[in-house]
Image (cartoon, rainbow, N blue to C red; front, side, top):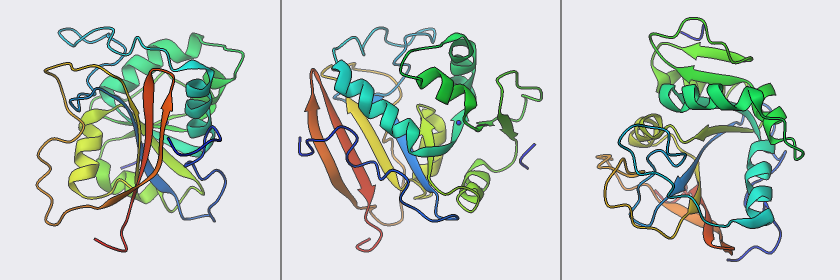
Length: 215
């Protein structure tokens, strides 16, 4: 039970403040290598590839990530990603306001062992994460943003619950590590439409929206 290269305008593809209450959308946002690996872009996990996101995304890349966060009302996180965020973000006070937004946003951490989260505005999801995150769609007006949290994204993808992927693609082959799209064994293919594809300095920004009308 519940106990956070077409478009010319930064942020296009993120439908800001565009829904009525009860129409939340599950958005998975990932830093990803060319071979689909998303593991530990911050280089904090033991044994994970380190420093692979050390490419220039410029001010526009920062703007895209801020617009993505501004479009969200809630942020579910897997336990590993949550622990990393909770250790870093409370001390961050940046001029752009990214840290303030991260700290203020309602966060939902998937865990059966965490009972007293220290990061403010955190709720622990200890039941079926897919069911509990889906239930959030009836409680928020805008996006439900799942950042990193690859195992959680795998679970949601296997149940065809991800409505949109925001991918910042880095020009690097990592060779090994957790991938964004493992063998999900979907009953039918899940079709997506690329609504934004653009180069942002050294990286590529791609937004893929689920096309439920055609699959």
